[in-house]
Length: 400
Image (tube, rainbow, N blue to C red; front, side):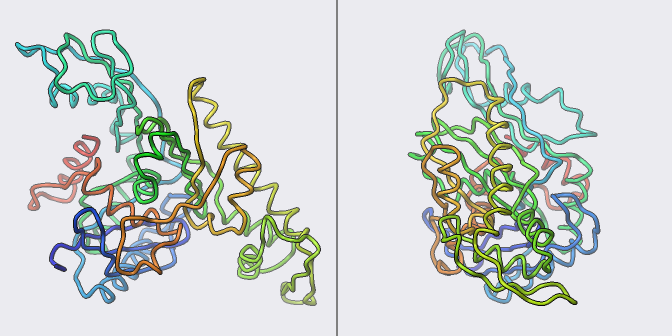
């Protein structure tokens, strides 16, 4: 059974997490978890290559010990400030004798949707169809088998900076691993926490990491929009550290005891910086620091969504993942701001180490196991190619 194990690697801004699972009939039995602090990485950008390699090695070694297997290949999550997303259109002629839309026609039109990208600067990771138009009839979700002379696509394109992707893959390779696929992280988080009915009704996923917050908007079971907001939960920690003159570790503790729905008169002990006497603050002082930063994040999310200009778009609920989703009462904070129901998303479709893994901070790592083999992340072949050649082949196929 362990011979069938697959692994996901989530290199976040605060922690690196490796998860090993055995897939079985749509369920993933988690057999190993490994975590290490993320060093050498800032908002998805590598600042120290060897430090990133070491973080990967530590997380992988811990997961291997628990699972009792050796990990050689991983599905890799990617996010950061260098990621860009956009919507675009393209069209192709259907030239076969039957004028029947076939799989290769869908591939061609998606290829055309991002063909103008400069691959020296940016690499397309995903080209996701939002809808198709068949001979002028718009709103088609699955055009396969239809007769037509022309096929058009409205596609959502997700790309990353080529140097950033290349350097991250170099880190994974130096850690002794082969990256068999890469997934934009909010897509992975959505795969782990959202079911088809939720995606059909309309849902906004907010994956609140340490340095950034990733967005994924679904409606009619399709990705309509994704994005990266340059604010994460570590901003709350820094705000507390500066505002209360406490250490980063103490500010992390204070963030964990804050409750959006808590009593503002409740007193909280605070350990001050060296040379200052420890004291107490009330819960309202935490609220005065944390809530404005949350509202800044929410405003940036709202402004990002405003670019869609889709008056018919309906969002039924907001689902929160990532470590920032552990902030007490954050569902109410989101609901109050957006006027929508909100909940914390927990990884589903898993067995085994469920108590450890059913936490919002593991949504991406688990989602890599779900989305990687069945989504747009494609294996690299043949194995004997050089690393650079494998990367070129793999990245060109990835969106398919």
